[in-house]
Amino acid sequence: MKNDFSEETKKAIYSIIDTFLLDISLETSKLTLFSLVNNNRSITMELFSQNIEEYIYLTVAQSVTTSYNKGFENVIKKICEVLIQSQNGQILKNPEQFDLKFQLSNGEEYCIDIKSINDQINNNIQSNLKLREKAEKVGKSYRLCLYDDESISDEAYILNGNDFWELIAGFENAKSRIHRLINGAANKLSVSSIIREAKNRFISEWKMQD
Picture 1 (cartoon, one colour):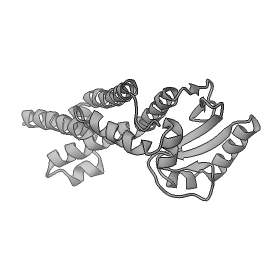
Picture 2: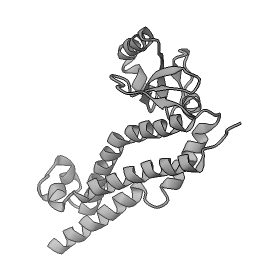
Picture 3: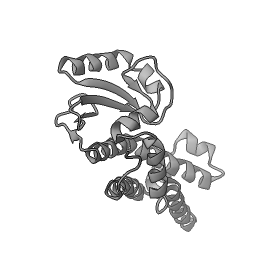
Picture 4: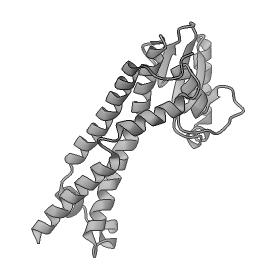
């Protein structure tokens, strides 16, 4: 019975994560000292006026975090596509309002929405119910998926982390394998290293102004 990813699948996932981290790094490289400090006399900056290095670190970290949050759910979506295809499933075109539509090798078709934690569901209950009705009207199963939350729901259509990754990957304990792959992909370039390198660059530029 399958209980791990093939080498080809692992390489595809590594490539997705590497590209994601590189994109964040490139986005951070577009920041300038002028945009961080000279052109942004915010109240926060005044608070750190006696320790500009701390302010630079805070601002760079906020920028990197924003880029990360915007892009990571798309990373999860791309990983899902790779895993579905790895179990001989098919990605269906025109997902419309859903994050992903696909058909598994057994013929079952799904429309799914992907969220990180349960709180995101509680804020959009009515919207989620409408999407469920829309999927079921066209004969597809709807699943609201939490890729990083193990909260147990009374609703069968809500899948927590382990159940979600099992559906997508086709075997049990797939979530732990995903975690291991992501951890391995971050060895070469991590978010913390992106923040650190940008911070050091701006601090050096700031000191050269004195």
